[in-house]
Image 1: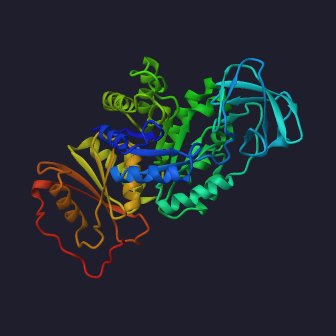
Image 2 (image 1 turned 90 degrees about the horizontal axis):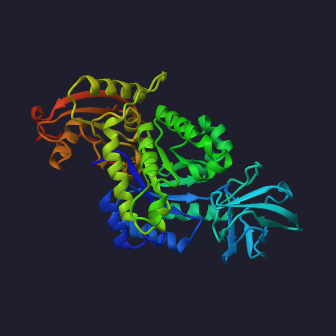
Length: 468
């Protein structure tokens, strides 16, 4: 069992029940729906197919401020080709945002993660003429970048708002916001969600990178989206930006996902390049919680082999991880507890760590130290149970312990009964103090040899209501 989590993007290659089950069987922890393509009926179908096979979290990837090209047909481009792109639906190709007053003749426009470079050669009343400086095919949903401009666009389109509502009706676990620019973007998205939904900030432009520290303070998860980032801030800056974001995320205990072109060659080939393997390995060494596969699993020929490859890389690399979290002085009890757990796991022969947690916060704090011991999160809440599945090294179990007189004893018995801990294990438990049900307040550490506990007795506490 590896600790690095794997997100798989669902698409034409994997949107059938047998394909989803195959991905689950080889170790996918989370499924992503890219809303740049498809419609609500397709998203509902994917949601139902995933839910039939697994309790893995589902992510709706919203386009948000990202500029994309819309169009019903594709168009082949060669050097010197010109084509018109409008700012409304009256054109064969049109932008999903209106930034007509912000673009000028001579500006460069990149299409499809920088694969096709074009230049604005003419502005009309409500459209622009682009001349291609390269070759390729443009079609609906392709991303647009402006390396010379900081285009201002609304945080959400009407379509985004509709999809957020649809996701809430379905029960989507995470919403990923493309081109997150600042904390205000995150605040706006959270205001539209319920308390059970998590937000992933996709960092893929200069503003998001500049405002990263304020973003990481209020977001539930971070995605290092390297494709667009490589165009927006230039390719050579991406490696250090990636390392910086992973380091800051680890320090804050915020899960971080590394994405884009991880095993890109496996879209067409059964094996990756050596450089791709090294790229994935270095992300794991740096401290990424998860690796995301995009085209590899959505349109690729070898989705299952791609997942297996990430598992192989993780298995080889994880034992070499050495993580130090320095310079953090927090008054929050769970953060102090996590440091104590880290030291105890270094100094003692601890086999497993079990965190009884209402929010998952303490587990994330412990995970950031990349301890060698498995971390088992036990939570009474289903939303926490699913969302914790993207956190490095964390295994989640849903069990309501809140109505127990001795929650640790009760949880130990349940875990032993189901085979999560063994009779000979020495287990470190952290437990939530008696605080309101929606607050974390872990202030207890207990270390037990399981064979010395009397696990046949569980005493129910009077009048403690079940949160579900």
